[in-house]
Amino acid sequence: MMPTYNSLSLYLQMIINLTLITGLILFIKTGIKIKVLLFIFLFGESALELTDLAGRLMKLNSLNTYNYPLSQFFGLVMITAVYSRYFIKIPNLLKWAVYVYAVLSLAVNIMYIQNIKSVTFYSNIVSSIIICALAGTYFLKIIKKTRIDRNLFSVSISVFLFFSIECLISTTFNFLISSHLEWVAPIWLFRGILLCFFYISFINLGCRIGTIRAR
Image (cartoon, rainbow, N blue to C red; front, side, top):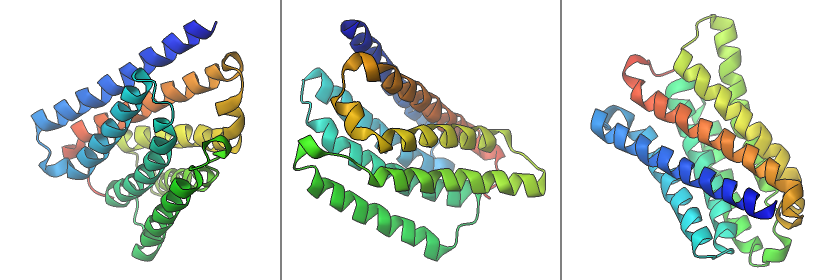
């Protein structure tokens, strides 16, 4: 079973990278002037995903240990910025509090993972809760206004689903990185599928951004 799981995981990782590269190409072809923030987000995520894939192919297993907190930091900062720009009004004080937390969390995680055997990333629970709260706040907004933009709504659905699962995964991170592959592989594969749909929703948002009013 192990080779099968490994192969599926590798194929899924390649699909995710191809999805991001395709999205970047589409952004460039349709013009990035009005979607700079989304382009930066996709470009950064693409760089992190490609680095992760390269590390896996070169069997640099420790690379992902550093890539994970970097991805956590970048995702929290950029998703907060995207939600502030297109979805909801976030007070500047609250927004900067999230940014400060992201920086502190990154610093602590980078120092903590020097001991790779005891890595946990429990701070990702807080990051995931913050991002889920952003999506939840948008849901409350559309309930009050009874006006739904399908593109923004689909992004928020994918954001909420992915980071809800991410939060659950983070509570058992040590188990998921140390247990037998046959036990935990389906969980990681499911996370990968959600991640792919997560990126697709943002690509779709960028391609249709001209029809969306900010907040």
